[in-house]
Amino acid sequence: MNTPDHGVRSDGPVVALVPAAGRGVRLGESIPKAFVTVGGTPMVRLAVEGLIASGVVDRIIVMVPTELVDSAVALLPPSGSVQVVVGGAERIDSVRAGVAAAPDAAYFLVHDAARALTPPELIARVVAELRTGHRAVIPGLPVTDTIKAVDPTGTVTGTPDRAQLRAIQTPQGFAAELLRSAYAAEGVQATDDAGLVERFGVQVRTIPGDPMAFKITTRLDLVLANAVLDGAGIQAVAP
Ligand code: C5P
Image 1 (spheres, protein in one colour):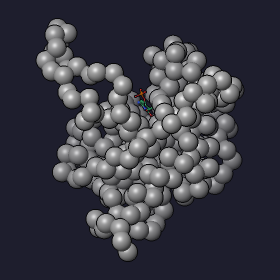
Image 2 (cartoon, rainbow, N blue to C red; image 1 turned 180 degrees about the horizontal axis):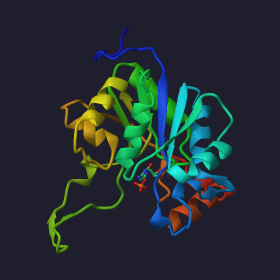
Image 3 (cartoon, rainbow, N blue to C red; image 1 turned 60 degrees about the horizontal axis):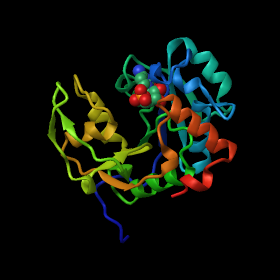
């Protein structure tokens, strides 16, 4: 084999974990964000459909607020490979619950329900890269804004070189034992899963992301997502 081998099994179930337990207050809706519809379909269902359409995922575990387990089961595709579990107070707690529900996984994908329009092709690329032996694979796009570091008063403390920055998306892919170790540590905090495994000194590989994998966080994102599904602007956002 001509591909790098970093000690990962090249076979075994790929389990996708879909954190969908956020309250999503920035979206300004009265229901949790993952259940808000885009083009008439709840985001969490769109995200799950994308994972299924990729053809590279064996099982999907969706983490939702405790009171919405039954609704989630009802609205997700009726498939034996889709399971719903209760999430947690923070995203990290929700992902931990998903990890615990898949002791047999060889690989994990962690994929935000809020990235509802992620192309299946991007999901397949992440898994293909894992199967070549990379233990942590994340999609990212070059940033278009200049990013400043600021102190608590808002005073600029630095301007990182934009060429070296990437805006990171999901799905983030991991060799399963690596993600399990990351989540087994006490008191872990990070805004993404790769941030946890970076602490182990593991090389995290970035691959080109996709503009359509944007996270639907604000009202403006929701307007954009609906416009994309309506057909308006698909040409404009194609990479
Ligand atoms: O809030 P944010 O946009 O970062 O959330 C990213 C994803 O994590 C969303 O899909 C959200 O539903 C999920 N999440 C979760 N459990 C939480 C908070 C967020 O599953 N407690």
